[in-house]
Length: 277
Ligand code: C2E
Ligand code: MG
Ligand code: MG
Ligand code: MG
Image (cartoon, rainbow, N blue to C red):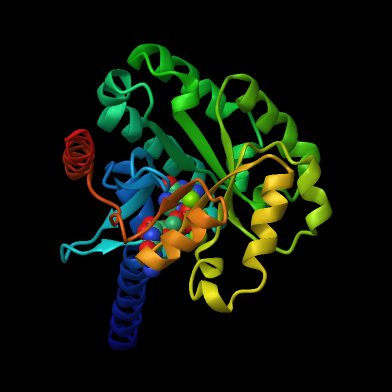
């Protein structure tokens, strides 16, 4: 009678161990661990004025360092974070990193701005505004230097999100509509959106000569008096085309990939020095 009991107990122990291991290795658990240990990093990709080459600021892009030294990009773990309720903690850490990384710098260069990506959930309450207000005061950063990027999904439930977006704008933050054109929303709604700047998605910047819809997006933005940032600019000919069509700003590998804070500041200083000489 002891033998089968022993077998049962060890089988049970093995199952428990396997479960625990699975939990430890589950992506959500690992992400939670990384958040608790403040392991996420923020990289900065410069945004350039297409007409004179000046750096006007950067977009903050989150990265997750892996044990093998590689960096996981957000298109893999942001959806996971959104599904598992971790996204607002990530937003919080990204906002805090931006002020820690560049607070002093923004103070010295009042023309520079940083844009931060938000998820729809960040627009369900005023938590973000409550986080930003004391940080701006502490670092002496102007609210217009911190812009917020919101995808069309963030406007999908306007009854809830529009008042929050309006309060962020009233506080002085610029609001960008991100990845414009990739959502499912109708164009008529754009008229009523509380936004300042439109980001043209990379998919409309790739192979521009074949894209018949891109000029229409640009015309529409102009008629709504929205400034534009083109994302994913990789070649001089794309930059020329965009400039000719009246797009003010560009961002992409032609200028720089997203860089860790120290490298971004070095890049910014060098770029400004080149323009002054
Ligand atoms: P996004 O906001 O559209 O950011 C632009 C993405 O395009 C970035 O990818 C950037 O590295 C990439 N990119 C920029 N220029 C080029 C180029 O010339 N060529 C190519 N092939 N790619 C370029 P990344 O960093 O992987 O970010 C992916 C997306 O994850 C972002 O798309 C944004 O929607 C989201 N994301 C990033 N950081 C955060 C964050 O802190 N919070 C939230 N909620 N979402 C974030
Ligand atoms: Mg963005
Ligand atoms: Mg974008
Ligand atoms: Mg995009």
